[in-house]
Length: 93
Image (spheres, rainbow, N blue to C red):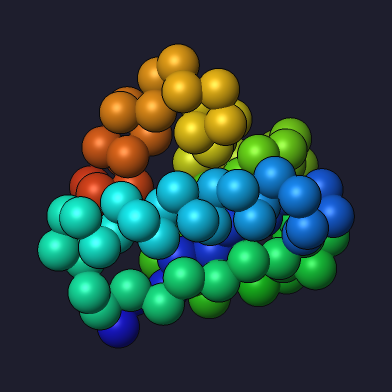
């Protein structure tokens, strides 16, 4: 089972919106073996390698930037398809 973590600054508002959108997308695209998790960036800094995919709606430190997909387009709708494509690719690895 793959682990997909959604993070934001507080782990409450924007991560909840993105978690819902990603959850719906996962169902629509046949990704059934994915555990969808939600948290705040500060709590996940040292556990980033525990997840197969990390999507963030906030800035992340440079030390983990390469491991994180920026999820702001999922809030705005502009560029959302590209974000979902990156998630899809990461889940296939």
